[in-house]
Length: 269
Length: 285
Ligand SMILES: Nc1ncnc2c1ncn2[C@@H]1O[C@H](COP(=O)(O)OP(=O)(O)OP(=O)(O)O)[C@@H](O)[C@H]1O
Ligand SMILES: [Mg+2]
Image 1 (cartoon, each protein chain N blue to C red):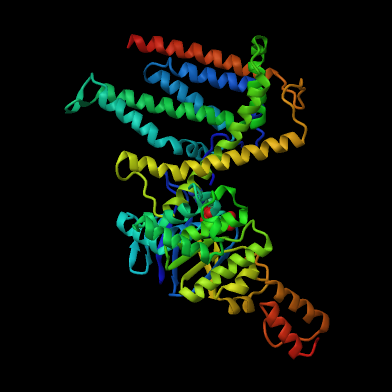
Image 2 (cartoon, chains in turn blue, yellow):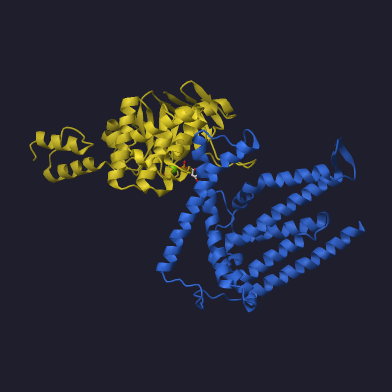
């Protein structure tokens, strides 16, 4: 099963692939931040254009990105529907009790949808073009200042990389166990709440057992290979900040400036 | 129980976004009481074929008929439950489905879901445990305290306890020691013969095909590319068919002997026993 795209790496040679993971991570978080400052059509179009450009540059096909949206599509549609139904204002097209479909609602719905999709796309760009191990190194590097206040940054980075590594496995396994229990006659989402909770036991328990077993195996392997958490560590892979990384940060700042500008122009309409 | 696929196309659609077809316009008829081995490359759609038979995957086009129940794209709840009761499905590494506090409860889970009372289900569980060769004293233990091979038996018992008329198995021997695997396969063969269970077995081991199956089904890219009697299949198998299929051990050995001695044995031997008697008959040993 390879539905889950988030957390998978696609090797490549693109410009985006070669950026320093620290810069890439900061830029992505920053971009998600400024998404919330977009107002009006032009702002959203600008950011969407930027997102599509970055995706194009990553050299990974659009199909792969769409697959990243797939697992979340219901959640997105649900949120959008709520937004559409509960926002009033502008021309009202349809009215039923507390629900209204209005022009403001529709516009807001589209904006929310775009924001969701862009967040997913941009995070997918980062995870698709960065090896998970580089990503962990980047998080490690960015958190390093916290060592001063005695945060165990190394352990934290390790835990994070292990967790990232196992998310796809866990999802695969959930699907498998659910299928196996359905084959034994379990029907999900039927009966009273208590009955429904009961059907969760045969799913959750095997998953717990499996995860614990895997954690134990992993701990054994790490011990055998001499891992000790309290020893100072050096890095085998060195992260190098290049001119391109500086350029990419500057591009992010320029993008912010442009967004502020179009927001301002939009306000004059 | 007969199983029929009628122009079945299926995919793993999620929400409004479609994925590529995993099963492509598939027609198939598995007669009553047949024992069919399914082989093919990894990703050919073997597991998906099994899931279609008990409605874990629904056809997007066409329909699957199991006995007198039809599974269509809508997946009517009642008929799905009926089908799942009739079709026992042993997944790959089925021990991952164990969850209950005792082995007995775990085995009884299926029958209870299919409407038996607790007492009846426990009775079925005990019978199934005996069938797969589990000791009585194991029944009250936690399934997680057992060895891998025993867990596999518990899981299989959990499926047999519902008295299925069709049994579909996805590599039931994977990850077991040779002895354990032989025992599981012998059990499946025995069930097929005594209870007339229609059996469908996915395997990567051609010796399994030669030893246990009657028919063989080759899948490639979501389609059936061959469906024949096992003997015919191995007799006609030539290098030109690019299915990357290995011959059974005995047959490979036979070809080697024939190349060495320059004599051709009169029959195609699929098992060691056949080869031995053919060699004795030809006075090569
Ligand atoms: N739950 C799923 N969601 C999406 N795609 C899936 C899912 N399960 C399988 N697939 C895809 O369906 C195709 C066929 O898979 P299937 O598991 O049926 O192959 P298989 O013949 O059983 O292979 P193997 O010999 O490795 O078990 C594969 O390309 C796989 O990626
Ligand atoms: Mg499979």
